[in-house]
Image 1 (cartoon, rainbow over the protein chains, first blue to last red):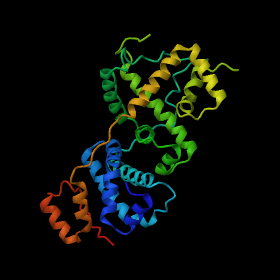
Image 2 (tube, rainbow over the protein chains, first blue to last red):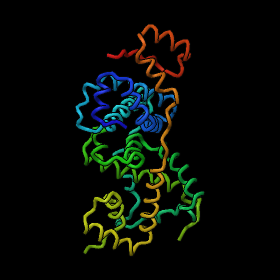
Image 3 (cartoon, rainbow over the protein chains, first blue to last red):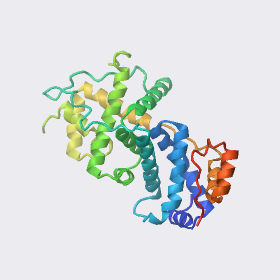
Image 4 (cartoon, each protein chain N blue to C red):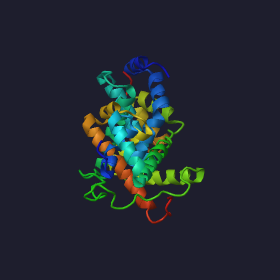
Length: 199
Length: 102
């Protein structure tokens, strides 16, 4: 991977090698993110194409205040959300804590958290759970899904997430908490009643 | 030291797993863990969930993505339109792009 400054210089100069480098190094990441957001591979390819075009059109505007990775994710994110809005598929989570009803007045669990299986750390258990997690992520509202992907899959820190989504760190922390709780809750719903207790 | 409640444990779980909690927060959190098996289960499964989400693999771009994009971006508009309509059947490229290099 070439140095970021050299890569930006190459992109600004319209050099073939520079955007090939971008596609080679960041393409699969961008494709994965777009695919998870729009839910369809062909549409995700379209989003990535639009992103590549936007890079070439707007590279002059890149001021280097964030990493090129954050900048690329920001573009692909906007393109994907535009795409979802155009096709009326953008779903935003309600402004409430997914765990609002989980506790009694004394702050104790109303219901014991369901166990996720007897051998969740074994290979078969983990494979099965990974499959469930993919399905459940796809069911999340878009603003939760993007938080889970950026933090847990692409391992971005709070500052990078703020750069991608254009939100404050306080907002990012609230969204991340709610997104993780919503993901846990959906996973639990798939397990509750279907698997025996571990304890 | 106040004994943390289960709802407070869940509210603080992000700060704990992200390594942002203070020493006293961690102490209260793990003290609660020692006495609450429900929260221990929750924490164990929460960590497991994060671990597995981190294993979701990236989608790969089609092998010819770079070449096709390269051609699309460098060809003059009329030629690109002609070539991509004929060669790609207007399907793969989605919408033709005619951005010429500066």
